[in-house]
Length: 128
Image (cartoon, rainbow, N blue to C red; front, top):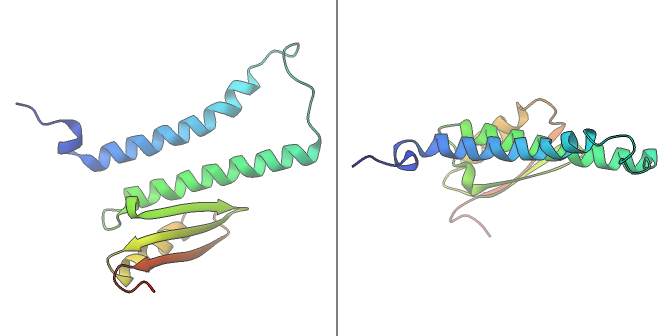
């Protein structure tokens, strides 16, 4: 009997799922850009566009950081939460050692577009 893809290569499945999330996040702006001029709603104010663009940029940055964490063999990305606001990435969660706390921050820092990293990851058993 053949092993499922998840049993053979769970990391590849996680990476594929994260990539699908990135594609889904990109799909909404592409779909709205394909609206015809007649069907398009009136243009929002520039301030509103800036907020939407900032939100989309932060969402993409979050996905890129999560993908980078998933791609690292020594880090359990499923244990680490990622949130982004105006390019500042906040990491949270619980890991098994201090070296993983530092490694996750190092990975996040290397992602293009990250302005700063706030590391709120705690080591299991040392959380207070």
